[in-house]
Image (cartoon, rainbow, N blue to C red):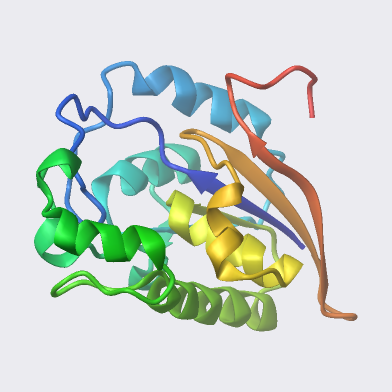
Length: 198
């Protein structure tokens, strides 16, 4: 089965706010990227659609699926707790620096660590690959996509941010259910780096 992991389109965030599990609007020209993403997907007739529950994802999922999608909180972005909707520059360095040094394990107050996000994302991915046979489109966030790729490639979570996952990007995974093995067909295909028709 083919699994398309899609990061939502760019958000309007001129004040550089930390917005993990907060609602934030999309940039005004989002429909251009919506069309680009839809044109790249090769959908089978029985393709299933999943989305993070946040509007920046469900808007795209609605467009791609004609409103035939299921939301799942496990594929939400990282919960930054008390940092949510604060400007990154205004977060106390005594809190921010330990997170930057060990984002895998450090938990912002009332939030979660990247390890927490990894565990729930992989719970979702394993359930998906164990139970589904149809192609799947998952509209979610960069953190979730990095977590799933880290799981497939079996590399340390502290290296997860070495993977660039841009807004509006598509990462395609082919899952061989019989052998329980994944093949990454492409990663981070997006309107900025797109050169050949897939």
